[in-house]
Amino acid sequence: MASEVTEQYEGAPSGISTRERQLNPHPWFAEMREEHPVRWDPERETWDVFTYDAVTDVLRNHEVFSSETEIESDAVDTAAREFLQGILFNVDPPEHTRQRELLQDFFRRDNIWELQPEGEAIADDLLDDVEDDGHMDLVEDFSQPMTNRMIATMLGIPREDHDKFDEWGHVIYQVVNGQENLKQPTAKIGQEMVTYMTDLIAERREDPGDGLVSMLANAEMDGEPVGDMQIIQFCMLMMVGGTTTAITSNVVRSLAEKPHLFDELADDPGRLQDAIEEGARYETTSAGVSRVATQDFEFRGHQIEEGDFVVPWLMSANRDAEVFEDPHEFKPDRKPNPHLAFGYGIHACLGNSLGRLETFVALKRLLQRFEFVEVHDDDLTPVGNPFRHNVRELPITFEVAE
Ligand code: HEM
Image 1 (cartoon, rainbow, N blue to C red):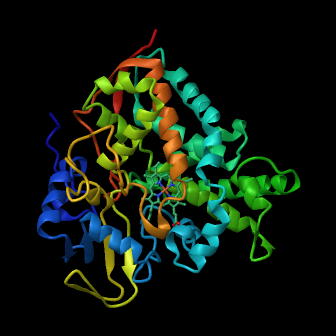
Image 2 (image 1 turned 30 degrees about the horizontal axis):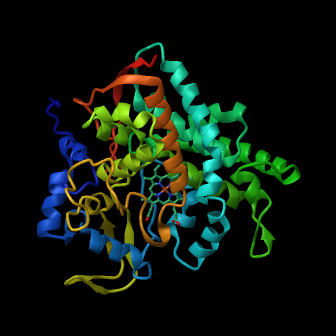
Image 3 (image 1 turned 60 degrees about the vertical axis):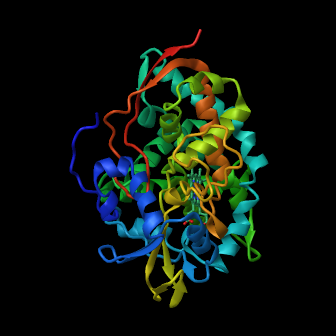
């Protein structure tokens, strides 16, 4: 039984502001889809959008629903906030198109999946460290460092510097998940990263190698080389976007509802990939995204005014019975599965192939090497940022496969 806790989660709609509701917000979302598919929340002064149809309408209409929102977080220092303002995820076209065109070819699925062998080696290193213990915290010991190292690999950071990335990624993860007030650590790691990346960019301009840093160091935007600061901003964006949405722990929680799957999926890569898609739908890590209205606009019988905040809840859309049969059941073979876990429209996740790859290699190696995996999910704590649906720790026990 989960312990009785009355802790309130700031910034969350009041219907899901307790710990229990953060862990399981689905009944409240179902009620909202039924009764108020679009509603104004006077407490948060925000429009909430719950149904699949309405969520995709908002995300499709980027001229009315802009991504140019202020980055609001008291947890990070002003420099860190300014550093990310104006970068891809929070700019509209034409600036968005200009930046996305520079990056998107690199993030093609076939290019990213070339990292599969390195991904498996990273997973194996992490599993080697816990193998003899018979238990681990899946978030802290596996899913989180796995994500940091995959980002480092994608950027082309030399293996011997991956430890630094673990440390930086860990701080970023805690900040974005609302876990700590980390003004000092973010200022410190910000400076360390700028110094490190500036040197690396200079090296890669001289002697190009693999990875995103090298690609950007030798690319042009508007006929000019891409500046060092812009490259560093892109890399930090990848760390923020990529390290905070680790979905492995959520997928494992979903699999635990049908434990026979641990065995069945270990040697069936096609089915494992489908199950990951379903896990991404079923427990959506990016619960909601933020938009701001650029003009007065009538939307589904409501009058939205210029400057109003709007939150399309991806997590709610992903359980909409109009689109998904038996939406509250985890069906690992669900097809088609048009979930919105990676967003929708022009801002849909640039790193989705990397996110999918890292979850795939993590689970593939975990399930192949360990058996009788048991998930201890009776006393979990949500991460603390209502836009992120994930847990702080996920203890598991296992036996090493013969
Ligand atoms: C693993 C699971 C991941 C999930 C569930 C996820 C989810 C999302 C979602 C929902 C959005 C849309 C945001 C919006 O509409 O406002 C998004 C955008 C984005 N994601 Fe991911 N993401 C993941 C992994 C990654 C990784 C590994 C990277 C880095 C390589 C990344 C980089 C980005 C970027 C740069 C954007 C902004 C794209 C744009 O504005 O054009 N994500 N992601």
